[in-house]
Amino acid sequence: MSNQPQQAPDSGTTKSGRKKIVSTASGTITMAAMAIMIITSILSLRGLPSEAKYGVQSIFFYLLAAVVFLLPFSLVCAELASTYTKSGGLYRWVSEAFGPRWGWTAMYLEWQTVVIWFPTVLMFGAASLAYIFWPESFDRALASNKIYTLVVALVMYWAATFNAFRGQKSANLLSTYGGLVGTIIPGVILIVLGIIYFIAGKHIYLTHEPFFPDFSNMGTIVLAASIFLFYAGMEIQAVHINDMRNPSRDFPRSIFLAMLVIVAVYALGTLVIGLVIPTENINLLQSLLVAYKALWSSFGLGWLGNIMALFIMFGVVGQISVLVTGPSTGLMSVAQSGYLPRSLQKVNKNGINKSILFIEGAFVSILCLVLIVLPTVESAYQIMSQIATIIYLILVIMIYGAFIRLRHTQPNKKRGFKVPGGKFGVILTATVGILGAMLALVLSYLPPAQITTGNPVVYVLIIVIGVAVIVALPLIVYALRKPSWRNPDSHFYPFDWQIEGRKPDQISKWAPGYEPTEEQVEEAEGIAISKHATQKHC
Image: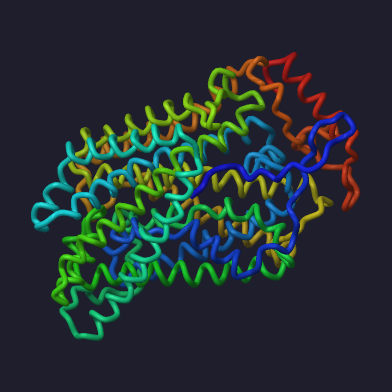
């Protein structure tokens, strides 16, 4: 998924000669187009094996996460995006509610979520590469080797990083074709093969567990918490809501349509893996590849399983190539307001920030070394997934908090889309969303019962310390920031509370539908720059 803050295009200038920001033309995105955008930004096959361990119960978890996370979070992001249409994305949403300290923290956490996620997709890429070869026993042993996985992961990542220095255009093209060849086509093939396999009466390993899981044993449902990360990315597409002709009507329909497709693909794909692989043999990294091999082999075409591994490997390369620069670009767009030293804001002739990419690479390399500490590649993969899930859920809770605060402090703000149901709808949506996110967050700290993770104390300590350090870093950077860090060429549209001359927690005095004049905006921006230059803390 892309993690760049969505920037509205520039058009025209103010009286001072500075470019002003306006929104794009409305009505250019249809309901179906928005649904496709949501699907492509969320759907991935990589995590299916972790849910396949639940068999039929996986459907329950997919539906539950869709109801308590995907649906309410989509509605909240849609309201925030249609209300705060200036550049900045979630940075603006959180800053409007709680001030720039927490807006910067939210933006950093989004970047860090993807950085932590990188080792998991790199490990999966190494497994995919292993399964391109013959025979399967060799593939399995190679994919399980920690040294092989570490070396391939680091080579893949740094190769993508050095390639990114050449610019983003080729990476975007590779990502587009990678998404088609490495996700969409393999996803369709997996489901179609599974249906044919079932109809043909082949041997089925899927057991008949009860539909509802046993909630008395929390360790057995830890893997289900990762579904929340499967559904991540709604905050990215929600910023395009103002480009819809009738967002109040069409966006909820787009959500429901996308949910149906996403849940169907995830559920069917997960069940297909369970059809051909016994639950006790499911491996988080390898079982998707093994499933293709088993399905094709059942029809005498086992070599096509290796071809599918090649397709999936190409998809991983596409993901890595675009995500190496995407998150850092978003972070730098915000950092130019004074959150990182100027030395880290420089870009090369291709518009790429090499300094941040090197820092990002150092993070990813250190995280990959977890492979050495944990007993298996599978356990390292899972711990990275759980840390990424926790960081993302902290960000999600911050966005819910911003939604609640802004409904209180800016009740008269014009909203292009509002969470349906009036006050009751707001309370229900926020309550369900926050409780669901908090439950998944707590579960993500526990070792899963289905895989070997070594010493549970070490496992939990890695997660606790890792999360604490990641959350503390942006707050430390914010506290140490200097006036000289602000880029004088960066012009960020002021927050409403800056224009009004109030604090973020104070209630707005603006009348319904009021829009500030250009003079008010320029004055607020001048005051914000002046304050930044004369004092360390806002």
